[in-house]
Length: 376
Ligand SMILES: [Fe+2]
Image (cartoon, rainbow, N blue to C red; front, side, top):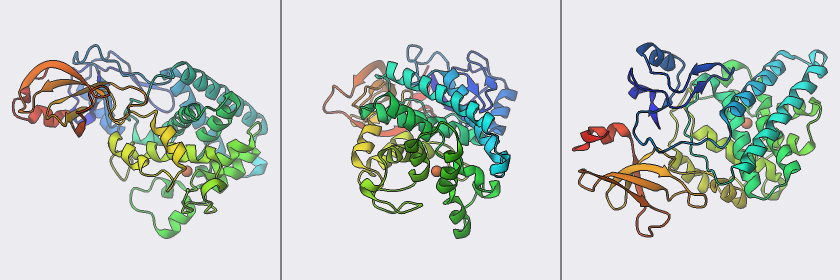
């Protein structure tokens, strides 16, 4: 199974991993054979890529760190909660009974995410983004929650701490419901005035989360401080260093990383290894160093299915990642340094001391290259 950009999908290809909308609707089930209409629909929905099962790397499974149904359930619950908040114009319209239920359900879902992450501790984040652009907000909330919790587990948090962190992280952008949608979804650059409006969302979110029943003070701090930065360049208060709650740094790193690796209206997704490098450089400048280090331990810089060129000149596909070796995957080599098909055979970079990933390439370039037409 591998991730294929929508532009390279062809009728007849088999869907390897089901695709859901943020409303929980099944858009395409695993095993479905693609038609031209399916592909056109994906293009309309601005889905960047799809996992395809074409018999290439049949033994390689791309595992998510949590179950698909939990991810979808979390996304639907966040959507419902945010949409209700959108409708609530002021305190008088606020329906406390409904909010209690929403928070209770969301708390149960975060608990389920924690259980799964604790049970799958060896797994790293290997999935590249396949979200439709319109679904960005809700998928982003869930991703930030999962990434924050993985960081919290690495830092040795107990259950109570994880639950508070997770609930704050999944609701971190609650205040965005107060930003006019024209500004929130504006494709171009924001004006200074518009950016000032966007920068109010941590405070608006804090105001809203304090009114939600059953949310603890540390969770509220995540909402309030997730844009504060270690060097004091963040907002809303320009706090720095240890003035910022550790939870907020955790959520901040997860937020930046997930935003970088997603396709947005105004720019294409940044490849995972580039986002990894950017985050790696942010320790003790944007975020606390130990938080960045714990975060990156969970991220595969070259996710399974990525085409890479090795320092030895060989070209192959990443087939496995090991925790603690984010930059050193196991690679199945298909081409020698001259571009001639070989083997395939595998090179394990976390064992081989002298070979590293020299660059990332994509399947289009591989197929277009000399001698590269003999791929399965
Ligand atoms: Fe935010």
